[in-house]
Amino acid sequence: MAERKISRQLGQHLTGVENMFFQVEHVRRLMTICSIWIFSQRLDTTLVLASLENLCSHYPRFCLVPKHGSRTETAIWTRPPRTWKPKDQLVFHTLTTPSTLCLQKYIASQYVQPFDPDKPLWQIHVIAGLKHNQTAILWKAHHSISDGIGIMKAVFATTTSLDPLAETYRQQKLLEERQAKDTNDRISSQQQHRPGTFKIMQWIYWLIWGWYLFISIIQQLRYELWTLSLLVTPLIRLIQRRLFWPFTPSKDTFDYDGDQTQGKLIAWTDDLARKDIQKVQHQHPGSTLNDVMLLVFERTVQRYTQDRNMHSHTPLRIVIPLSLRPPSDWSMDNKVTGNIVGLEAGISLQQVHRRMMLLKRSLLPAVMYYGPLQHLLRYFPFIMVPRCIQHWYADLPHAIFSNIPGPSVPTFFAGQEIIDVHALPPQAGKGCISVGLVSYGDSLNLTVLTDDHPDYPDLANILCKLFVAEFKTVLQESGQAPSSSCNR
Image 1 (cartoon, rainbow, N blue to C red):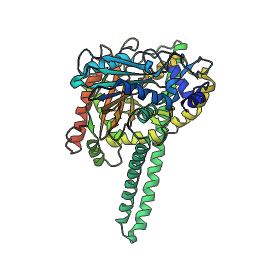
Image 2: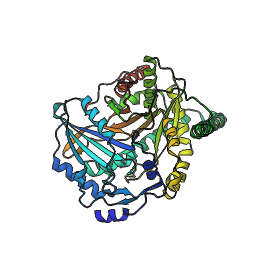
Image 3: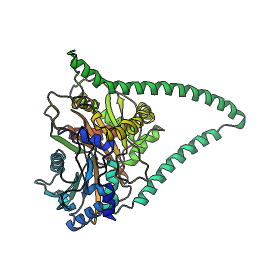
């Protein structure tokens, strides 16, 4: 069965999106996805190896290598050397100091290490030496293998106690419950009116809806034009450079002189209770969990810049990855696109929600994915923009904010329960903040990756502390008290 799955993948070209992640990778911004799991006890090495064998037998991309790629030829999936075994991807490490800070430093040091091109592009680190005899696991994988959700689902489905069918059913049930609640709210609001006044209310409703539709179209067009202006800006800068037309780039948030640093900083927040986030949502009907977290993140960045007298008048530009896969899709594939949202200082939760709705309604991400990215780059890889233009595009966003759903029930790996989960998407250009929001059970946490630069010492850890403080402030502004911390 496993050999048959591998044979079907052998010799196949990478898709356009997978090829793109290969071509845009740079030594200072690797296209690496990572996840960190924390356990209360030591792991059995035999059970860990058995889990890796099971993973490779179900998902061939974990035992194949992309090779023979160039600017004019798309790479194909090939076998690794005959001596390769899944255990070759396993690394053991013991921390010198039993602290979370030491663990984060080790993870950051391994994050910046590129993969061996002769081996499958993933790795697992088993890390001992934590306090209270805890153990951590670091999963690393190249984005060309799959998007973050695909990798997380594949790993959880084959190496842990998580039941994919049951988890899919739970996610679909939660989605249906939210949709049913919205429908019931609309019906109950209609039933409050008497039959005699219902027709008048209906006419008023249609007039308001028509005006709202007109305003929405205007706002959507403005958003599309703003996005397109960001896309053409690097091309304009290139033309200016070629014509020797001098220009001075403005100092931006978290920018610094020189090239992007290769060293990185990683930190994560304490757990946030999902019911606390729902309290904020309840005070602002229609808002989503992502809206609340984006508001808190924007306020976190503003708090950091204000405390250090850093003045920036440009909106915070955040890339939001958009998954194109349904909850029942557990395949290993890059079914992800993205768009950018601008959040200025002092923005409200309702405004964040409206910006996110504009982003979700935009046709540009789907057009780019199904057009030039997925197909043209597969057959014509040479159309990729030059490296200098890639640098410009990479430097556009201030942050990449990815929301990755984790297991909704306690999950076991190698016989031990996972007590904490963290995740990180790849980073973009100089000064960009990589943010991974991951849920596990009834709580969430935020993991942050930043450049390690002397202009911004300990940036990742400071942002995490400010994020928790700002979330408590948002909760208090909504008239709610934070619940006790969630213990799993």
